[in-house]
Length: 192
Image (cartoon, rainbow, N blue to C red; front, top):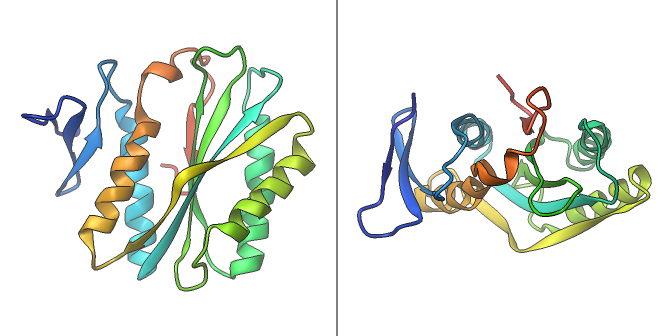
């Protein structure tokens, strides 16, 4: 079981241990889903071991019609990742989480991880996501996230800490509770 302890002075921050490293994460009153936080750390660990620099791009997908499954995100990701792999000729990492807060429809938070030597800007990957979403989902929207692009340098722990902190939002429990028990609430390119 991962180690989690609240920050002594900042109410919404906690220390989270993944392997032998301690990371700062956002922590809400409802708690986090440790499987998701571990998956975030595992995905970033894999990508930073593979590439010296990792470009991280965040965006959200909203559907107009509720579904009991994740077919829409599965189809989107399959098509989108293939396009990114062809464009950048490298492995593409990702994590998506399904949420449903006050809306009757679910939405998805997505983070994409690309070799930072081949991708320096979020503009092309985001536009490719927009095109793919419009091809696969005729009724829905895609939202570019303000300050949703980061570059992680393998030798710069702080650059990794910033992304882990930002992505820890994906692990919050509160908006995952409406999902069916049988339905996945997240998926990564390196699921265990």
